[in-house]
Length: 335
View 1 (cartoon, helix red, strand yellow):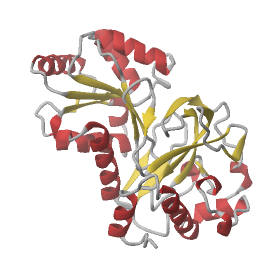
View 2 (cartoon, rainbow, N blue to C red):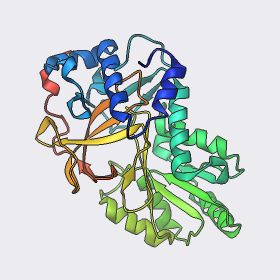
View 3 (cartoon, one colour):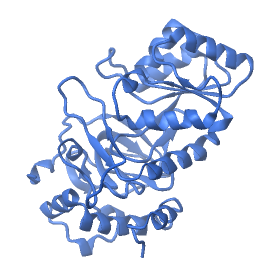
View 4 (tube, one colour):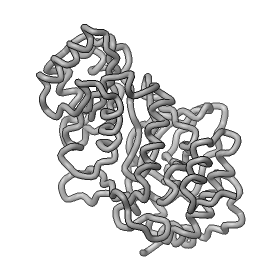
């Protein structure tokens, strides 16, 4: 039995997750959050969840992500070390995620980065995230800033709108065959690549999404093709994360994402939030639910607004947003 009030026990359990014990960990965490998270408890109660009958991943209730816009989704009461806030268009209500332990978030994204890319110090890490840097409390900026510091490369850093400096840095790194990761919001990468086309052989180009409200919307496939054409790189990598989570997934090709062991994707029917689709031998399409075991002191079971494909090996791709972003089921509870 895991004592979720003990940080060391939590870390040992979460970051040693395997396919064989993910389900038992998730069920134990569901019970902890049902008992200690008032918002999640009331949501589960409103949809008539029988706790004793939750004995598989497919029976765990997923909290609609919109609750992070209006409620403090936390377990018990604590003073957060950080409150991450989502981006949004003018006049929109942003999500807020009160984080009890930044070290838990750091361990999650550091271990995930190591799993997919190795050690940060092996790279020059460049952040092109102007819209995120213009607002406070971005979980993405926090993560990239930490990776930049850990890289210890003199040219690692945020480059804002200084495309000329970025261009010269990339040319310098390419000439020295310096392994580099250029991680940026989609519209900024696209603007840069159009103004400074080049041939990158030693640089990983990684987009984090983010076209809405800043440029004409284009498909992910079209974005990647333009970036590949302009920057001369055969593939575009992607990062998938969100304010409400403490874990991320990465794609190294074709927009197909893979999760760390403590993060898992399930799908639900787009027209029924309570119909969790059972994984088959063929790819499935549905609305995306996320299990993030690292999100211990908030909610680990999130029903997102994204549509996606899920493959039998657990990898997934994002197809776009639900037509109606207000997930059915939210109206069942008035807080």
